[in-house]
Image (cartoon, rainbow, N blue to C red; front, side, top):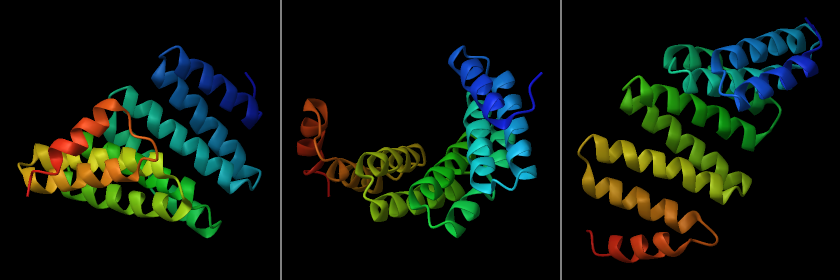
Length: 173
C-alpha cells in the first residue's frame, strides 16, 4: 500500500468514481495525513474536503462534517476564497443532512458571499439554490423564492427552465 499522498489521492478519486465512498474517504484521510506530515497544509485541507464529500455520499453526514470542519480556516489563511467557499459549502451540506438547518443556512450564505467575491457565479448559484431549498423545507416560502431569484441572477447564462422559473418567481412578493 502506498504512503505517497498524491497516489492516495488518486486511489481515493478512483474509489469515489466507482461509488466506493467509504473506501474513498479512507484514502483521502490518509492523503491528508501524509500532506500534513509533509507540511502541505492546503493539500491536506483539500483531501479532508474530498473525504467530506465521499462521506456525505456514503450517508455519513456527521463524519462528513467532522472531516470538513476547520478546513475553511486553512484556506482563509492562504487567501483562497474559492476553496474556502467550497469548504463552507461542504460543511453546510453535512449540516443540512443532519437537519441542522439554521447552521447550514448560515454556512451556505457565507459560502455564497465568498463565491461572489471570488467571481465564481455558477458555484454561488449552486449554494444559493441549496439555501433556498432549506427555506422551502422549513416553510419559509417567500424567503425561498427570494433566495432562488438570487441564485438565478448569479448565473451568467441561465438555461431555458431557469429563465421560465425566473419569470414565475417575479410574481411572488
